[in-house]
Length: 214
Image (cartoon, rainbow, N blue to C red):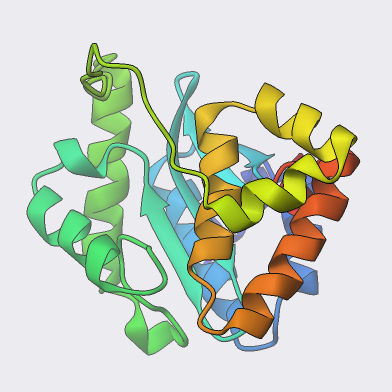
Protein backbone atom coordinates (compact mmCIF):
# COMPACT_ATOMS: atom_id res chain seq x y z
CA UNK A 1 0.00 0.00 0.00
CA UNK A 2 2.80 2.42 0.97
CA UNK A 3 4.68 1.51 -2.21
CA UNK A 4 1.64 2.36 -4.35
CA UNK A 5 1.21 5.70 -2.59
CA UNK A 6 4.88 6.57 -3.14
CA UNK A 7 4.54 5.61 -6.81
CA UNK A 8 1.53 7.89 -7.29
CA UNK A 9 3.29 10.73 -5.48
CA UNK A 10 6.38 10.46 -7.70
CA UNK A 11 4.46 10.41 -10.99
CA UNK A 12 5.48 13.36 -13.16
CA UNK A 13 2.19 14.69 -14.44
CA UNK A 14 1.50 17.31 -17.07
CA UNK A 15 -1.36 19.55 -15.85
CA UNK A 16 -2.64 19.75 -19.43
CA UNK A 17 -3.38 16.03 -19.32
CA UNK A 18 -5.15 16.45 -15.98
CA UNK A 19 -7.35 19.07 -17.67
CA UNK A 20 -7.87 16.82 -20.71
CA UNK A 21 -9.11 13.94 -18.56
CA UNK A 22 -11.33 16.25 -16.52
CA UNK A 23 -12.99 17.57 -19.69
CA UNK A 24 -13.49 14.09 -21.15
CA UNK A 25 -16.82 12.26 -20.98
CA UNK A 26 -17.59 10.53 -17.69
CA UNK A 27 -17.15 7.02 -19.16
CA UNK A 28 -13.71 7.97 -20.54
CA UNK A 29 -12.11 9.28 -17.35
CA UNK A 30 -11.42 5.92 -15.62
CA UNK A 31 -10.05 4.51 -18.90
CA UNK A 32 -7.65 7.40 -19.42
CA UNK A 33 -6.60 7.47 -15.77
CA UNK A 34 -5.97 3.72 -15.72
CA UNK A 35 -3.87 3.69 -18.88
CA UNK A 36 -1.93 6.72 -17.67
CA UNK A 37 -1.17 5.02 -14.37
CA UNK A 38 0.02 1.85 -16.13
CA UNK A 39 2.34 3.86 -18.37
CA UNK A 40 3.97 5.44 -15.32
CA UNK A 41 4.12 2.09 -13.55
CA UNK A 42 5.88 0.39 -16.47
CA UNK A 43 8.02 3.41 -17.35
CA UNK A 44 8.74 5.65 -14.32
CA UNK A 45 10.92 7.95 -16.46
CA UNK A 46 8.17 8.65 -18.98
CA UNK A 47 7.53 12.26 -19.95
CA UNK A 48 3.97 13.47 -20.41
CA UNK A 49 3.08 16.01 -23.06
CA UNK A 50 0.26 17.06 -25.39
CA UNK A 51 0.63 16.79 -29.17
CA UNK A 52 -2.07 17.29 -31.78
CA UNK A 53 -4.40 18.07 -28.85
CA UNK A 54 -4.03 14.53 -27.42
CA UNK A 55 -2.09 13.23 -24.38
CA UNK A 56 1.23 11.63 -25.37
CA UNK A 57 3.85 9.73 -23.43
CA UNK A 58 7.47 10.19 -24.52
CA UNK A 59 10.53 8.21 -23.48
CA UNK A 60 14.19 8.86 -24.27
CA UNK A 61 13.23 11.87 -26.36
CA UNK A 62 10.84 9.97 -28.64
CA UNK A 63 7.12 9.31 -28.70
CA UNK A 64 6.12 5.99 -27.14
CA UNK A 65 2.32 5.93 -26.89
CA UNK A 66 -0.74 8.14 -26.71
CA UNK A 67 -4.38 8.13 -25.65
CA UNK A 68 -7.46 10.05 -26.71
CA UNK A 69 -11.12 10.31 -25.82
CA UNK A 70 -14.06 10.90 -28.13
CA UNK A 71 -17.81 11.21 -27.64
CA UNK A 72 -18.44 7.49 -27.23
CA UNK A 73 -15.07 5.77 -27.07
CA UNK A 74 -11.38 6.08 -26.28
CA UNK A 75 -8.34 5.11 -28.35
CA UNK A 76 -4.81 4.11 -27.46
CA UNK A 77 -1.90 4.09 -29.89
CA UNK A 78 1.68 2.86 -29.72
CA UNK A 79 4.03 4.93 -31.88
CA UNK A 80 6.16 1.95 -32.97
CA UNK A 81 3.39 -0.65 -33.07
CA UNK A 82 4.59 -1.92 -36.46
CA UNK A 83 7.88 -3.01 -34.83
CA UNK A 84 6.37 -4.73 -31.80
CA UNK A 85 5.93 -8.48 -31.31
CA UNK A 86 2.14 -8.26 -31.75
CA UNK A 87 2.49 -5.89 -34.71
CA UNK A 88 0.10 -7.79 -36.98
CA UNK A 89 -2.60 -7.85 -34.31
CA UNK A 90 -2.15 -4.19 -33.31
CA UNK A 91 -1.99 -2.83 -36.85
CA UNK A 92 -4.91 -5.02 -37.90
CA UNK A 93 -7.00 -3.70 -35.03
CA UNK A 94 -6.22 -0.10 -35.95
CA UNK A 95 -7.27 -0.71 -39.56
CA UNK A 96 -10.53 -2.50 -38.82
CA UNK A 97 -11.78 -0.38 -35.93
CA UNK A 98 -13.39 3.00 -36.57
CA UNK A 99 -11.46 4.31 -33.56
CA UNK A 100 -8.18 3.80 -35.44
CA UNK A 101 -6.63 2.77 -32.13
CA UNK A 102 -4.20 -0.12 -31.67
CA UNK A 103 -6.37 -1.54 -28.88
CA UNK A 104 -9.64 -1.20 -30.77
CA UNK A 105 -12.68 0.77 -29.72
CA UNK A 106 -12.57 1.29 -25.94
CA UNK A 107 -15.80 2.35 -24.24
CA UNK A 108 -15.19 0.88 -20.78
CA UNK A 109 -12.38 -0.54 -18.66
CA UNK A 110 -13.53 -4.02 -19.69
CA UNK A 111 -12.50 -3.29 -23.27
CA UNK A 112 -8.86 -2.83 -22.29
CA UNK A 113 -6.49 -5.82 -22.43
CA UNK A 114 -5.27 -7.18 -19.11
CA UNK A 115 -2.81 -4.98 -17.25
CA UNK A 116 -0.01 -7.50 -17.86
CA UNK A 117 -0.56 -7.24 -21.63
CA UNK A 118 -0.64 -3.46 -21.56
CA UNK A 119 2.54 -3.29 -19.50
CA UNK A 120 4.17 -5.69 -21.96
CA UNK A 121 3.30 -3.35 -24.86
CA UNK A 122 4.53 -0.30 -22.97
CA UNK A 123 7.84 -1.97 -22.11
CA UNK A 124 8.31 -3.04 -25.71
CA UNK A 125 7.87 0.58 -26.71
CA UNK A 126 10.45 1.52 -24.09
CA UNK A 127 13.03 -0.94 -25.41
CA UNK A 128 12.56 0.27 -28.98
CA UNK A 129 13.15 3.85 -27.85
CA UNK A 130 16.14 2.85 -25.71
CA UNK A 131 17.67 1.11 -28.73
CA UNK A 132 17.14 4.18 -30.86
CA UNK A 133 15.21 2.14 -33.43
CA UNK A 134 13.25 4.35 -35.77
CA UNK A 135 10.22 3.64 -37.90
CA UNK A 136 11.11 2.83 -41.51
CA UNK A 137 10.61 5.79 -43.82
CA UNK A 138 7.85 5.70 -46.39
CA UNK A 139 9.12 4.94 -49.86
CA UNK A 140 8.35 7.82 -52.18
CA UNK A 141 7.64 7.51 -55.84
CA UNK A 142 9.76 9.55 -58.21
CA UNK A 143 6.64 10.54 -60.11
CA UNK A 144 5.08 13.82 -58.93
CA UNK A 145 1.80 13.57 -57.06
CA UNK A 146 -1.26 14.68 -58.96
CA UNK A 147 -4.63 15.57 -57.52
CA UNK A 148 -7.79 15.68 -59.58
CA UNK A 149 -9.90 18.59 -58.40
CA UNK A 150 -13.57 18.19 -59.46
CA UNK A 151 -14.63 20.80 -62.04
CA UNK A 152 -17.55 21.95 -59.86
CA UNK A 153 -15.19 22.64 -56.93
CA UNK A 154 -12.63 24.33 -59.17
CA UNK A 155 -15.37 26.59 -60.52
CA UNK A 156 -16.27 27.72 -56.99
CA UNK A 157 -12.62 28.35 -56.19
CA UNK A 158 -12.09 30.46 -59.30
CA UNK A 159 -15.03 32.61 -58.24
CA UNK A 160 -13.13 33.56 -55.08
CA UNK A 161 -9.65 34.88 -55.81
CA UNK A 162 -8.34 34.58 -52.23
CA UNK A 163 -9.67 31.03 -51.83
CA UNK A 164 -8.01 29.89 -55.06
CA UNK A 165 -4.75 31.61 -54.15
CA UNK A 166 -4.55 29.92 -50.76
CA UNK A 167 -5.62 26.55 -52.18
CA UNK A 168 -2.84 26.63 -54.77
CA UNK A 169 -0.25 27.40 -52.09
CA UNK A 170 -1.33 24.49 -49.88
CA UNK A 171 0.61 21.22 -49.79
CA UNK A 172 -0.65 18.16 -51.65
CA UNK A 173 -2.07 16.59 -48.48
CA UNK A 174 -3.83 19.81 -47.44
CA UNK A 175 -5.48 20.11 -50.85
CA UNK A 176 -6.45 16.43 -50.79
CA UNK A 177 -8.18 16.83 -47.42
CA UNK A 178 -10.51 19.41 -48.93
CA UNK A 179 -11.12 17.44 -52.15
CA UNK A 180 -11.82 14.20 -50.25
CA UNK A 181 -14.19 15.98 -47.86
CA UNK A 182 -16.23 17.35 -50.75
CA UNK A 183 -16.22 14.29 -53.02
CA UNK A 184 -17.22 11.98 -50.14
CA UNK A 185 -20.48 13.87 -49.60
CA UNK A 186 -23.46 11.50 -49.94
CA UNK A 187 -25.88 14.04 -51.38
CA UNK A 188 -25.67 17.06 -53.65
CA UNK A 189 -27.01 19.29 -50.87
CA UNK A 190 -24.26 18.15 -48.51
CA UNK A 191 -21.67 18.59 -51.23
CA UNK A 192 -22.80 22.14 -51.96
CA UNK A 193 -22.82 23.01 -48.26
CA UNK A 194 -19.29 21.66 -47.85
CA UNK A 195 -18.08 23.56 -50.90
CA UNK A 196 -19.45 26.83 -49.53
CA UNK A 197 -17.74 26.18 -46.19
CA UNK A 198 -14.51 25.14 -47.93
CA UNK A 199 -14.40 28.33 -50.00
CA UNK A 200 -15.04 30.43 -46.89
CA UNK A 201 -12.25 28.72 -44.94
CA UNK A 202 -9.86 28.82 -47.88
CA UNK A 203 -10.45 32.54 -48.38
CA UNK A 204 -9.21 32.93 -44.79
CA UNK A 205 -6.19 30.69 -45.47
CA UNK A 206 -7.45 27.89 -43.24
CA UNK A 207 -6.61 24.21 -43.75
CA UNK A 208 -9.42 21.65 -43.71
CA UNK A 209 -8.84 20.62 -40.07
CA UNK A 210 -7.86 24.05 -38.79
CA UNK A 211 -9.99 23.61 -35.67
CA UNK A 212 -7.70 20.82 -34.48
CA UNK A 213 -4.41 22.42 -35.45
CA UNK A 214 -2.15 23.27 -32.54
